[in-house]
Each structure stands twice: as C-alpha cells, then as structure tokens.
Image (cartoon, rainbow, N blue to C red; front, side, top):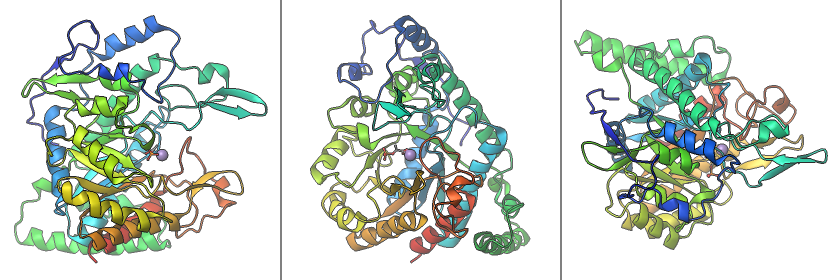
Length: 462
Ligand code: PEP
Ligand code: MN
C-alpha cells in the first residue's frame, strides 16, 4: 500500500444527524435495513455512534482508489484478485500467530498463482473487519431453550446463554479496535519484509513434507528461487519485493457501524467508508431498493455484490446502474456463488446477457457459499470436490462466454482445521470432529487452500 497518500478526512457528521445530510448517508435508516441488531439502550448506541464518528480511519481514501485500479486491471484480465479469510473473524482469534497464518496462506496462494499463471495477484483478506454475519434465522433453539442467533462478535457472543446472546452496542467499538490492531499487524507483515517473495520457502517451513500439496509447493518455491537468483545475477533491484500491497475487505452488514466510519475525503469531497478498503453486499441484503444498496451506492470504495443462483439479468443490471452509474473501472465486482450443481446452467446465461453491457465490472468466484451442506454427523460443512468443481465451472463459463474470470473469493484459515470434507488429507465425516473450530461457515485449511491455488493456476493458464 502506498504511503504517500493524504490521510485527511472531514467528519461526515454521523454524531449529529440533524446536520444536513448532503450525501444522503443516512437515507438507509428509512429503508428498513435487514439483518440489523436490536439494541435496547438507545443512549448507549448514541454514545458509541458518537465515538466511532471521531476515531481515526482504518484505511485511506487513496488506498481504496488504488484498489479500484487493481480491480480494474483484474476486470481486463491483466491481474487476478485473490480474497481469502475467515467466514467470521472473532475477537479471540485476532492473535499474532493466527493473523500471520492467514496472511501467509494468502501469500503462498498468490505465489502459486503469480508463478503458475504469470499473472500479478491482487491480495485481499476477509480480515480486519469481518465480524458481522447475516443469519437465516433470528433465533436458535437447543434442548428446548431458544435464544437470539449468534450474529458475529460485533453484535453478540457465541456462548449459548441469554447474557452472551444479548446484542451489545459496545461491541461495535471493540470491533473497531480489533480491526485496527489486525490491520496494523497486516501492514507490518506486508511492508516489513515478511511478505518478500525471497521468503517463499520460509513460508512453507513446518508443514509436513509428505503431503502432496506441500511437496508441490516446495518444487514451485525452488523454481521461483532459481528465477530470483538468475535475476539477482543480472543485477535486478529487488527492493520492490520487500513490501506487497494487501487490502482489507469485509461484508458491509451493520450499517450503524459503516455509517459511523464514513468520512469525507478532503481531496475529492466524496464519502469513503474507512472501515476497510473493499466492502461487499451479501446475497441476503442486496435488494435493489434496500438499505444496504442505498448506503453503499453513496460511498466511493470499491464494492462487491454476491450473486446467488437466482440472480436474474435484469436485477443485476439494475444493481450495477444504482451502485456504479458512471461505469467506473474497478468500482464494482460481482461475486458469484451459484453452487457446483448449477453454475454451468446459470452463469453462462448471466455472462451472455449482462457482461457485454458492463465490460468494466470484475467477475469473481466465491465457490464456498453455494456448496454448504450438513454432514450426517451434524456439522455444517462443504465438500472440497464441490468447491473445486464450482471453480472449474466458473472458468468454463467464462471461456464459453468469452468473458474474463477476474478473481477468487474463499473462506480459509492458515491453521490445520478439519471443517471442509476431502482434500489430500481426505477429511471424512468422522474427521470433521477433530478440529472443527469455526463459529459459522467451514473454512479451507492451509493444505486445501494450496491445492485450490494449484487448480486455479492451471485454469488461468489453460
Ligand atoms: C459470506 O460471505 O460469509 C456470506 C454470508 O456470503 P453470502 O452473502 O454469499 O451468503
Ligand atoms: Mn460464510
């Protein structure tokens, strides 16, 4: 991330809603926003809103603009966007080790893609703000006891007690502070030398050598090493390898939080949501006349919209018109999450009808959310083969339509969890019991993430 960016913002007056709302940043309040918490103490909400309105920004507007340029490159097939991270980050897991492991997994995947497909990779984490979850049910019942659903650490706690499940506005502040320390560490890792491609071997240290994906990665790392040594001998300046750009993304679900963290950029006079570089609208909250689409249409960050199997061309075109009326390159990405079983039916038609009218929009594959199942042993899981099949279907659909597959958006963790069935370690339904740690959706583990990167590299260079 470039450091020569003007960090000055003006308050966007979230603390004083009576002040005239020139940018319409509070219009969403009239649009019955879905999936919001229910707070009982309005005075406390007001205090939190006021405090969040004056905290320093987590990102700068110039960085968000830079990301738009990078996504625009991806939309033209000149780069590939790789977004990865937890379904839901938790406050407890914002530790140095876990953050490092996730960043490292994305870096390793990016190395595979960059080398395997000779393509610059735009690196993004579902990190430093991915704390709010949409839920299909407001309540959860266990052994005859019904409590509010867990909605992510920014809203309530996962423990199944009435106190833990109560919606607490002070968690909005905690989410900001945890995002801030997470992003600080990400910036240190990616600016301070840890992400230097010359450490491509180092990143793999400690993983089992008898695993086929690590073996394959080691081979690739050796080739990268040889290429780097050759370039070194030729006198190439490696200073640029020391730091990498790494962007933070999350679902913009809690509009009170996103609104309070919106500032007016002093350079352009435009509002930016400074809670993260990239924000997306989920499948459940993307109604064309809804609050989320309205709010995100008014901030200038790069944004994504999830598109499930029922997204029809007309709705998709209207969403683009509302969120990106000027057709700004890199502003909008469609993150398709169709399901392995239907992607080859649904996506080609969408691409044929929509893509020619929206050539500047980046198409990204989320192979996770259309492939969620419940195992016979009761776990929410996914089959690795389905996830891989959706990725293959995504590339096939783009080849068929003559459009650009611009990116991949996955749920992963750098740790050795057993949440997704299959992969080279052949995790089976019993195996899920071993290290099933996610609080919401199942994530690829480190090894499955690398295997996915090899598949994508093959598809990209096919
Ligand atoms: C998610 O990305 O975690 C999510 C909830 O996705 P979707 O909105 O596509 O269901
Ligand atoms: Mn998820």
